Image (tube, rainbow, N blue to C red; front, side, top):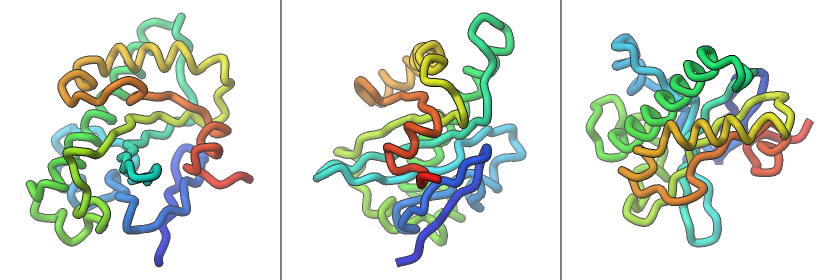
Length: 176
Protein backbone atom coordinates (compact mmCIF):
# COMPACT_ATOMS: atom_id res chain seq x y z
CA UNK A 1 0.00 0.00 0.00
CA UNK A 2 1.40 3.37 -0.98
CA UNK A 3 1.06 6.44 1.18
CA UNK A 4 0.91 10.17 0.61
CA UNK A 5 2.10 13.08 2.74
CA UNK A 6 1.00 16.66 2.15
CA UNK A 7 3.14 19.63 3.21
CA UNK A 8 1.18 22.81 3.90
CA UNK A 9 1.38 25.80 6.27
CA UNK A 10 4.34 24.34 8.14
CA UNK A 11 2.56 21.04 8.75
CA UNK A 12 3.12 17.57 7.37
CA UNK A 13 -0.26 15.90 6.91
CA UNK A 14 -0.32 12.12 6.79
CA UNK A 15 0.95 9.73 5.90
CA UNK A 16 -2.37 8.68 4.39
CA UNK A 17 -3.22 5.59 2.38
CA UNK A 18 -3.06 6.96 -1.17
CA UNK A 19 -6.39 5.24 -1.97
CA UNK A 20 -8.09 7.41 0.69
CA UNK A 21 -6.50 10.83 0.13
CA UNK A 22 -7.15 13.14 -2.80
CA UNK A 23 -4.70 16.09 -2.89
CA UNK A 24 -7.28 18.20 -4.68
CA UNK A 25 -5.32 21.46 -4.61
CA UNK A 26 -2.50 19.90 -6.67
CA UNK A 27 -4.78 17.78 -8.88
CA UNK A 28 -5.13 18.04 -12.66
CA UNK A 29 -8.85 18.44 -12.09
CA UNK A 30 -8.29 21.63 -10.10
CA UNK A 31 -5.52 22.84 -12.43
CA UNK A 32 -8.06 22.84 -15.26
CA UNK A 33 -10.30 25.35 -13.45
CA UNK A 34 -8.08 27.33 -11.08
CA UNK A 35 -7.37 30.14 -13.55
CA UNK A 36 -11.05 31.07 -13.28
CA UNK A 37 -10.48 32.34 -9.74
CA UNK A 38 -11.55 29.15 -7.97
CA UNK A 39 -9.92 28.84 -4.54
CA UNK A 40 -9.42 25.32 -3.22
CA UNK A 41 -8.91 23.37 0.01
CA UNK A 42 -5.67 21.38 0.35
CA UNK A 43 -7.01 17.83 0.26
CA UNK A 44 -9.88 15.42 0.83
CA UNK A 45 -9.42 12.40 3.06
CA UNK A 46 -11.78 9.51 3.68
CA UNK A 47 -11.57 8.41 7.28
CA UNK A 48 -13.27 5.19 8.29
CA UNK A 49 -14.93 5.41 11.68
CA UNK A 50 -16.36 1.94 12.24
CA UNK A 51 -18.94 1.39 9.50
CA UNK A 52 -19.09 5.13 8.79
CA UNK A 53 -17.15 6.78 6.00
CA UNK A 54 -16.43 10.45 6.55
CA UNK A 55 -14.94 12.71 3.89
CA UNK A 56 -12.75 15.35 5.49
CA UNK A 57 -12.27 18.48 3.38
CA UNK A 58 -9.13 20.04 4.85
CA UNK A 59 -7.71 23.56 4.61
CA UNK A 60 -4.50 24.49 6.44
CA UNK A 61 -3.37 27.89 7.64
CA UNK A 62 -0.30 29.13 9.48
CA UNK A 63 -2.14 31.99 11.24
CA UNK A 64 -5.39 33.94 11.40
CA UNK A 65 -6.41 37.53 12.09
CA UNK A 66 -8.04 38.29 15.43
CA UNK A 67 -11.85 38.58 15.45
CA UNK A 68 -11.63 42.16 16.74
CA UNK A 69 -9.86 43.17 13.52
CA UNK A 70 -13.17 43.00 11.63
CA UNK A 71 -12.27 43.60 7.98
CA UNK A 72 -9.28 41.19 7.78
CA UNK A 73 -11.15 38.65 9.94
CA UNK A 74 -14.26 38.72 7.74
CA UNK A 75 -12.11 38.41 4.61
CA UNK A 76 -10.24 35.45 6.16
CA UNK A 77 -13.50 33.66 7.04
CA UNK A 78 -14.85 34.33 3.53
CA UNK A 79 -11.74 32.82 1.96
CA UNK A 80 -11.99 29.75 4.18
CA UNK A 81 -15.68 29.38 3.30
CA UNK A 82 -14.90 29.57 -0.42
CA UNK A 83 -12.08 27.03 -0.24
CA UNK A 84 -14.10 24.53 1.77
CA UNK A 85 -17.27 24.87 -0.33
CA UNK A 86 -15.21 24.57 -3.52
CA UNK A 87 -13.41 21.52 -2.08
CA UNK A 88 -16.74 19.88 -1.30
CA UNK A 89 -18.20 20.82 -4.69
CA UNK A 90 -15.22 19.79 -6.80
CA UNK A 91 -14.81 16.60 -4.79
CA UNK A 92 -18.42 15.64 -5.45
CA UNK A 93 -18.14 16.64 -9.12
CA UNK A 94 -15.02 14.46 -9.38
CA UNK A 95 -16.77 11.48 -7.79
CA UNK A 96 -19.67 11.94 -10.20
CA UNK A 97 -17.26 11.99 -13.18
CA UNK A 98 -18.07 15.55 -14.23
CA UNK A 99 -14.43 16.40 -15.08
CA UNK A 100 -12.47 14.44 -17.71
CA UNK A 101 -9.13 14.63 -15.83
CA UNK A 102 -10.60 13.05 -12.72
CA UNK A 103 -10.83 9.40 -13.76
CA UNK A 104 -7.05 8.92 -13.87
CA UNK A 105 -6.32 10.61 -10.55
CA UNK A 106 -9.29 10.03 -8.25
CA UNK A 107 -8.33 7.54 -5.51
CA UNK A 108 -10.18 4.24 -5.29
CA UNK A 109 -12.01 4.94 -2.01
CA UNK A 110 -13.58 8.04 -3.59
CA UNK A 111 -14.70 6.07 -6.66
CA UNK A 112 -16.31 3.50 -4.36
CA UNK A 113 -17.80 5.99 -1.90
CA UNK A 114 -21.49 5.51 -1.16
CA UNK A 115 -22.50 9.16 -1.33
CA UNK A 116 -25.92 8.62 0.21
CA UNK A 117 -24.48 7.43 3.53
CA UNK A 118 -21.17 9.33 3.55
CA UNK A 119 -20.63 12.02 6.15
CA UNK A 120 -18.62 15.18 5.57
CA UNK A 121 -16.39 17.36 7.72
CA UNK A 122 -15.26 20.81 6.58
CA UNK A 123 -12.07 21.32 8.57
CA UNK A 124 -9.55 24.11 9.03
CA UNK A 125 -6.24 23.38 10.77
CA UNK A 126 -4.32 26.40 12.04
CA UNK A 127 -0.71 25.68 12.89
CA UNK A 128 0.40 26.88 16.32
CA UNK A 129 -2.96 28.39 17.31
CA UNK A 130 -3.81 28.43 21.01
CA UNK A 131 -6.92 26.47 22.02
CA UNK A 132 -8.64 29.59 23.39
CA UNK A 133 -8.31 31.37 20.02
CA UNK A 134 -10.30 28.68 18.18
CA UNK A 135 -13.94 29.17 19.36
CA UNK A 136 -14.49 32.59 17.69
CA UNK A 137 -13.09 31.20 14.42
CA UNK A 138 -15.22 28.07 14.71
CA UNK A 139 -18.36 30.13 15.38
CA UNK A 140 -17.69 32.55 12.50
CA UNK A 141 -16.94 29.73 10.05
CA UNK A 142 -20.07 27.82 11.07
CA UNK A 143 -22.11 30.99 10.49
CA UNK A 144 -20.45 31.55 7.09
CA UNK A 145 -21.14 27.94 6.06
CA UNK A 146 -24.69 27.76 7.41
CA UNK A 147 -26.33 27.65 3.95
CA UNK A 148 -23.91 24.95 2.77
CA UNK A 149 -24.55 22.90 5.91
CA UNK A 150 -28.32 23.18 5.34
CA UNK A 151 -28.22 22.65 1.56
CA UNK A 152 -26.09 19.50 1.84
CA UNK A 153 -27.79 18.33 5.08
CA UNK A 154 -24.36 17.97 6.65
CA UNK A 155 -25.64 18.00 10.22
CA UNK A 156 -24.20 19.17 13.49
CA UNK A 157 -20.43 19.16 13.98
CA UNK A 158 -19.73 19.18 10.24
CA UNK A 159 -17.54 22.30 10.45
CA UNK A 160 -14.51 22.55 12.75
CA UNK A 161 -11.50 24.77 13.29
CA UNK A 162 -8.66 23.02 15.12
CA UNK A 163 -4.97 23.55 15.79
CA UNK A 164 -1.96 21.35 15.09
CA UNK A 165 -2.16 19.59 18.48
CA UNK A 166 -5.77 18.61 17.83
CA UNK A 167 -4.79 17.49 14.32
CA UNK A 168 -2.33 15.03 15.88
CA UNK A 169 -5.13 13.57 18.02
CA UNK A 170 -7.31 13.12 14.92
CA UNK A 171 -4.53 11.36 12.98
CA UNK A 172 -4.11 14.16 10.43
CA UNK A 173 -0.48 14.78 11.26
CA UNK A 174 2.13 12.67 13.00
CA UNK A 175 3.39 13.74 16.42
CA UNK A 176 6.79 15.38 16.23
